[in-house]
Length: 356
Image (cartoon, rainbow, N blue to C red; front, side, top):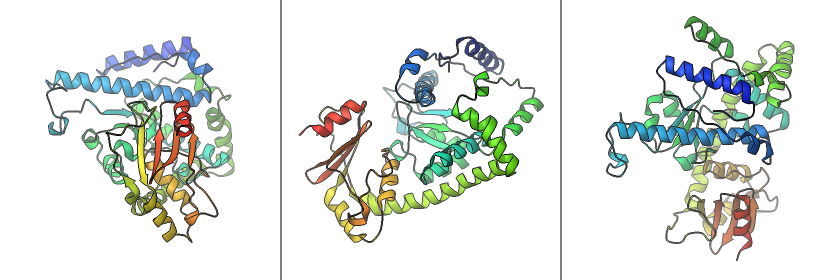
């Protein structure tokens, strides 16, 4: 992936990867992004580059899977994807494997703890995440339940049986030192991205300055940060399981014959039964379900800020706004239902909540 942000050294790195891939008979794809557009886009450059990278990786992986499918003699137009033999990859699935390791996990945990985070954030980098069609991480809406995630992590070959795009990180329990040792033992050349040494980037500052200082003062701190992520992930799974037991009954099956106004074909939408939700909230009036509700929605693919649904005077402290938009997402009470949507742009989301 060539981000177009450091022309000279990035060209060198691309050539290195191409030569390595050809030497080891691995398919090679080169995708060059618009570096100037990334620099000029609103928001964090690191975040924008990551989003663009994953979108491009999904496109490449899907294209490669379809090519493999065609070579195997299966035509998407003539073969039911549900009847394919297990050994045949699905052309509508993309599996992206990255080399994030234990050091990356420790850095992520340090950064999140420093700025403040929720239970979801304390889980750190996830070993398995679903990606939507534009490369954004999501959860159950792409077919990845908690149980499916655990099964795939323990049985990586089963990943091709799920109708989703995945990002899979198998090295989160492996240290950089162990990876370097493996490379040396197997005569594998190591290529270092020189931008990783630039401490003007927040993660590099943590990697080269802050985490080493913490390790000097508290030996084993990085390992403990990774341990916290594991414990938080277990706690999160329990919260989500409880959230599913409480809230899944309020989901209304979407009627495809009534499309949303202003919505594009790829608009993601769920509908909640307002009466059923209110009944549940009244039954739990003495509890605080606001964070559970927010995390449950995140598992449906809709991320909102921590206080978005919090109302101290509401039953179970869950307050649903009549109409509100957050970035590309919108919430609107319509009749006896609550529509929660994700649009292609913030402008579409705002237009939807402002229309009658």
